Amino acid sequence: MRASILFSVALALSALLFLGGCAFFGSHPEVLLPAADLYEKGNYELGRNRYQDARASFQKIVERHPQSSFAPLGRFLLGETYYRDGEFDKAIKEFEAFIAFYPRHQIADLAQYRLAMSYYDQLKPVEQDQGLTGKALTEFQKLVKEYPESRYAPDALGKMDICRLRLAQKELWVAHYYFDQRNLLAARQRLERILKEHPGSLVVPETLFLLAEIQRQQGEPEEAVRTLKKLVDDYLHTEWGRRASQQLSRAAQR
Image (cartoon, rainbow, N blue to C red; front, side, top):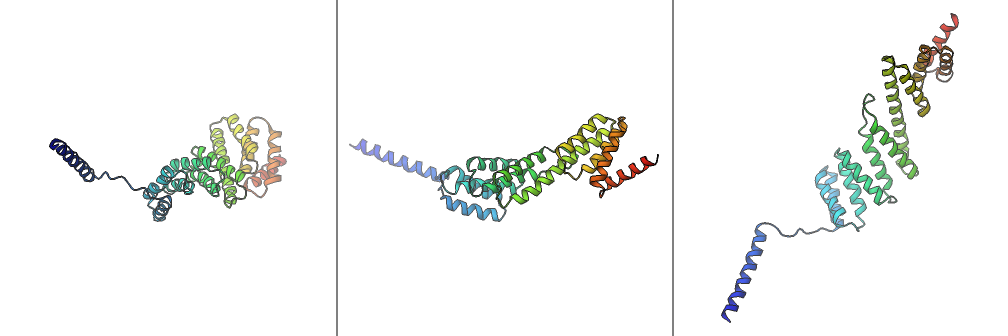
């Protein structure tokens, strides 16, 4: 009997020591806040530009309250913290995930807009690779197609024009490079691509002027004259239209 009592006391002491050790090492289980509280806390931190702290709250909503009505907002705002913090690659992944999970959500158009802007805000100078420009254009096009009534659609249309102009400018820049290298065939291919893919671009007048010069140097004087006449007819108000008119006048006097 005495041995049984001593054994029970020993077990009790062991339990107390174990619990005391847990408290000592700070291993109390973390209290899981409700999704609404996490959302409020995250928004508070986001409003003060404390992106990492805000991100922690939104991440908990996504991971621990996936069935909550706050889960879509948590997912979007998780991407928003990355976007505002300039971590565009991570923002893109979060916005893509949001659209995949909640394509018809009331802020799905905003997520699509932010996805496009995550590419747009990284646009490179014309002399550099324009891969991001093409991706931004594609995402803006998706916004206009999928959410035509969105409040962000008008801005998307304007930015689509900017992206198209940037892509056309890149083609023209490459064409000039080939022209300067005396690779007339490669330059001409770039110019003809501009006229085919970007017929309304602001670079079309300069494109036509350079194309006419290449046609002349390739022994196609009649084709060059036709190109110059088109330039004069359609773009006389531009510098390139006026220069084309002067060239045609000098040619007529010979």
